[in-house]
Image 1: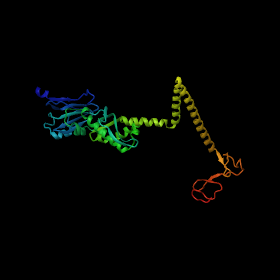
Image 2: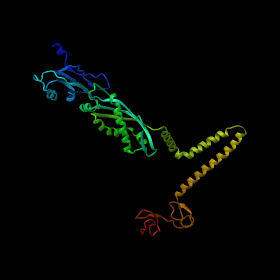
Image 3: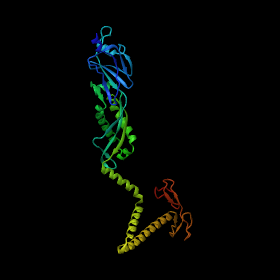
Image 4: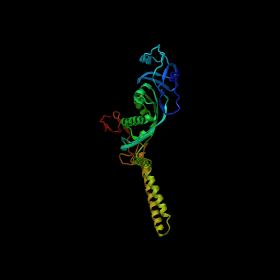
Length: 346
């Protein structure tokens, strides 16, 4: 009787002391489970009983006395004699259902994409994700099988490949530029996460979070981006930038001593005079253009008049007042009988 007592399990439970264990097979060591034994399943755990390699019963968090009411499938499979009070054999697996966070992913090889700004380029990306077991029975069938233990390291490479493949497809289907992806990582992470949820669900898993931390470009593309940014900043200030650089070079040359310095000073004076002349000419043209915009020219003598004048200050002729065509809205002369744009009779 002592031999039988030492080979019967009266209490089954598992305390997880690690952060990476997903599945733990309870060590039976040839022992049997006694009828009426106690089973403790803690929060974030699921216990699975297997009989002859098949899933018999699944227990969620709680405290159980293993009886017929708690083991309906296993009772039916084994047809226990003696009023269902004999010990029985079963494989017991504890599955961890907590979230496994800070799982890293990254592109081992660059992702090739067609970009509207730079053509065909290769990009790299990396980030992290979090997941948990949502369907323990499906997870057992699809992944860990009958392994005694199963950790996140056993599945990380496979999940990384799924994530990278899905992100590549999402980039191709979105047809947005690489610069837009890099500047909207939070939004793109949400889109990629929604695409990946079904792939994880097929394995009995749930993707709880996906973060794309960075999208990086090849060195030559980064140089092209820097050059384009510099050109964009200086595009409307290029004339001022050239004048500033020229003036700085002239000043440095004029500070030289000796005969060479004398020649440089003469040249500097001439260059400064030319620059001032060009600057004043540009300013005069700009003011003249602005004045023309606020002037009205006589159709008879061509004299320039104030915009509000009704008669020419030179010849006294009546200045034309322009209106709009009621049909097409084109600007017309007050003496016109037909619209020059649509031919409408006025």
